[in-house]
Image (cartoon, rainbow, N blue to C red; front, top):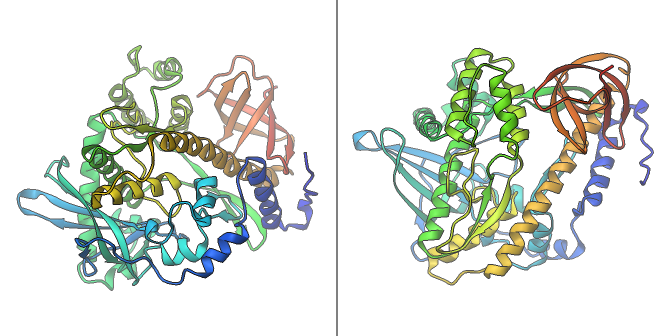
Length: 494
């Protein structure tokens, strides 16, 4: 293995992690830097995309807003809602028309197809598209007129989908909002963000969106959507020095976007099927280790059926969260690990693929983040061709190959992100060798046994005393070794 000459004593932790991230990208077959030809193409692009369809609409004056992370600059979606008679609500999701600028088989598109996703490491982001595009010309930026694909959905009073449509339109972002501040306001623990107050009627519109999103989630839960809550660790820097690992959790503002995107992705998949187009779908198959999930439930006094049942699992999770909300993220993490990872598959006209077990939906395409995910850009091109009445822009064999490649590349990207997180954690823990920690087992197989500490919330491998351990068990471990370059954090149970 190439040595990175890591010296953490100088406290230039961010620079160290950037080098590790760059090396990890190359190791996993991903391209960290844009080729010269990409820059040549980029120099010739100086305007955002324009409308191409005769039926494109002007929706600039609707109360569109974006809600994303505080530091997000690649804005893929805008949302707006409208109350209708009889308690129905129209929700519109505008998706950045990236294809209006990034054409198939250009150098820019080739780079995006290679990596298939933006890779978000704790020290550096490796964008799928050059930032001139993803954070500017193809981003739905504040007070910028942009062409978009709009997914229009009318929900009845109970949250059921009544009707839907998809079309091209011009939109304008009237408020760039952040998850945490919007959530605090909605939950009553913080003041209304100033940006909301500057747009007349936006506060009422967001409360309407929140109301609809909660109905959608409730309805999906009735059909077996898994209500999982995990803790994600985000490093906290003071300049170049890594100071801590802070836990991030979900909130009501994140739920608005999540629930609307799930609904929009379902509409997209069904629209393509109606047009006799193939679609690229994200699938989580039947859980790999349902037997262990049954054991975990039994250990908490609940009985699950022998065969996988999403509704039964969801009811157990709801009960478990109410009984012990502080430890629920640990149970969620165990269930996520036991469900297994998702994959991309192609649904051909007249055929079918397995539904998304965790979301309790049978039709689920990826279509709402084309600036940062290549499957979404593929879906956008399929959608635009279907809307215009053109032929399918990808052959069936080509789509099948892309589905497999996207699955493999996305898995590689996740491994890069995890490795850099672990390297950051190793920096924080390297002076704590010999200390003991409370932990939960997150992985147990022939490849090894892994645990996640409860505080700080980081993962490592159990090198000694792991026999007999299984996912979901709470144990006490001792830190015995760290390796910043490799992102190794090793524990013993003795």
